[in-house]
Length: 228
Ligand code: MN
Image 1 (tube, rainbow, N blue to C red):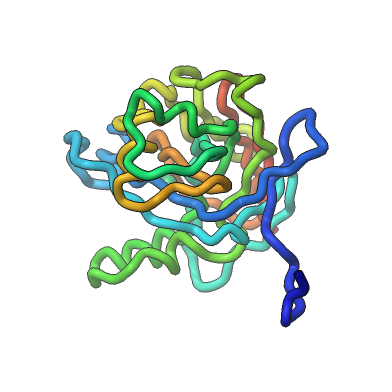
Image 2 (cartoon, rainbow, N blue to C red):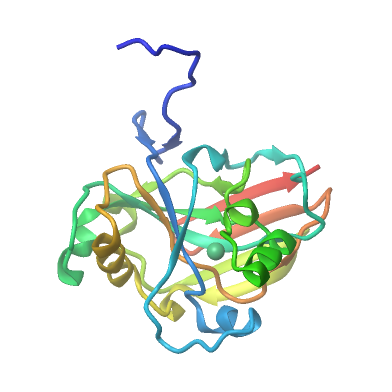
């Protein structure tokens, strides 16, 4: 097959201890999936059905990158998240079978233009320009399930310039990974190559030019990017 235009081809993520890469299809992000973060955003963390928004695959930035502070915002925020890589697609996946659709896990940042998102919320407009912009999804390499299992508890943290800003535990998710997969697969048909960003613990906050962000999910990986 040849492309009719100049095209870079699909985006991919490295896989730990493998020559093969993971081709990224769509990126689905879960909103307000930790109670403390829901509260800090001014919402009641009752167990309402999960909701989702998306980022384009080419928003992915490799671990270690130096990223330009994005345009059209004065309030870029960090949201550290565990990412779930779907290895096998499906529709109406039962909770009990959901984990068999996972290829592996990684660490990601759901970078957010909070001022743009806030304006969109106020106006009842879509979130994309607050969430789905260039370089808004720094991610680590993926650890396959064979190496990492299915992490359901363990620390998830983010430091800015060495200072701890976000700290939570995977067990605090309102909708855990199998429940999220099951619910999402009722809304859309999941495909191999899809990524789920599973939500962020409390402590989200602003990023300035010159900041270094270090994210960690116990057993899963370490993510480090800086802004200039
Ligand atoms: Mn998020």
